[in-house]
Image (cartoon, rainbow, N blue to C red; front, side):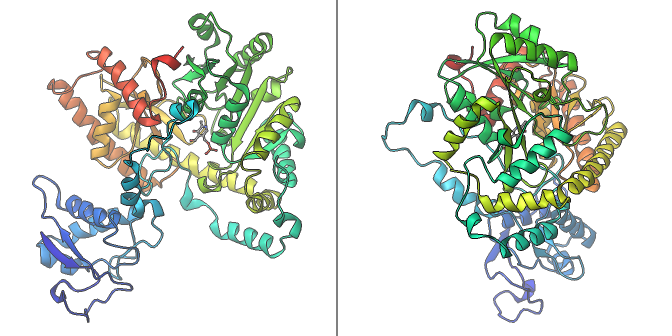
Amino acid sequence: MTQLFWGMHPTEVGTTTGRFMAKKSSTLPLNLKGPKPRMPLYRWLYEELRSEILAGRLHPGARLPATRDLAEQYRISRPTIVTAFEQLRSEGYVEGKVGSGTYVSETLPDELLQAPRAKSTAGTRRRGIPLSAYARRLRPLPRAEARPARAFRASQPALDAFPTDLWAQVAARRLRRVSTRLLAGGEALGYRPLREAVAEYLNTSRGVKCTADQVLIISGVQQALDRTAHLLLDPGDPVWIEEPGYPGAAVVFRAVGAKICPVPVDSEGLNLDAGRRRWPQQRPRLVYVTPAHQFPLGVTMSLRRRLSLLEWARRSRTIIFEDDYDSEYRYSGRPIPALQGLDRAAVVIFAGSFTDVLFPALRLAYLVVPADMVDIFAAAESVSTHHPPLIDQAILCDFIREGHFARHVRRMRELYAERLSVLVESAREQLGGLLEIPAVEAGLRTVGWLQGGILAERAAEAAAKYDVEVVPLSRYAYGRARRDGIVLGFAAVDAQELRRGVEQLARALEDCRRMLRQGRIKGSKMAKTQWHLAAACSFDICVGKVFDQRNHC
Ligand SMILES: Cc1ncc(COP(=O)(O)O)c(C=O)c1O
């Protein structure tokens, strides 16, 4: 163990007048464990410093020692240390330039530093208070990743490109002229001018046919799903969901006691005929679909399929929940109007979100409901949150009305198209024979099909060792998955990080392939049954045991 006092020259530990006084120095001694055998030195230093930051022993603003001093102390070369610092910097743990001082970032996400505290309450045993049937079925949905974004974070937009200053100006202006009427609160359906702006946007850009009276402002598509499930479903009601599909929908439907009926997705989206064959007995009360950009496969539902789905829903009196999440970003192919826009029988509930387009912390989204359901949705809102924070709604409304929203979407579409092409190009160069990325038409993420029998779970484990995030497709499947794939996000990080990610992913997948050849791990063909179980288990981990036998049709 080596002790260092951060912010001070290592030779001056214990004195109060360090030659290298930090901007804000930590006086806590830190213990760096010695280098690990077979681990590159830069990697060791990076991991040690990162764990000190994560544990809060190196707090925001603390200065890292000069590379020269570290080099002397550990007898490692300065380029090695610079590489470790650069890695920390690219992931947002530290800031400043090598040469003029490197400091722990002031803007580390709060959760990152509070991780140990959160852990300490997680294991608290519940007292014997009886819970409702709903509470007993409820499972948490893991959300925000605590670590700074890295390749291939799937659940995040490019927060580094968000125009924070502009948002601050719009917010300040709104706050300066805030009226007492606004401060007093508003309608349960949301801030009327925002509902009008959303209706206009949806009619012109998404092919939705609605008036502002049908638009509700809500705290995320997740809440829209929860609200819909509570209003439309009783325990035992069958709900069709896409397989593979968005786990957040299944969690909600399961919690209200609905029977989950997975329906396969093909190149045209949810396969209606397969659904009817698989579940011939019961007419579903609700069908959940992501037609613009299927989650997570990315396919766009064909017009033919949309029309048959609508016709079938009309005849069977089934409500369709159309989740339009992240469909603003289309890079190729013709946009097809929303299902809602083709609906002549008022069977579609349409939801979309500002969280992926602007920033996740905003928690504002919209729901378009058939006219005869507006009152019941408003009643549900009035007895719960009353309405999402009104001032945030007013700021967002100004942001849209002043044209910033449309400009931001345009800018982001260009940026994401660039990032996507970096991913596709680098993958073509380095992942040949390991991973195949299909043509990506829309969205912020893509599936990658694993080659040569590599299992998705193994690939994700190996990638994590190389500091790369990928999600195995099995996490989104409910039964047997047809093919092994992983989900890669390409929006959250810049081109450099994407290239690093591809390089590391290639190493990880090479490792898997080598081990497969040596018979040290199982391949997908060899382990069909295990695969099935692994898929079910990993999905449980991801969404907190969404399914059990009782709730699975
Ligand atoms: C397909 C899909 N629907 C809904 C949501 C939740 O959206 P929101 O953040 O608006 O609650 C997500 C979030 O990742 C998603 O991927």
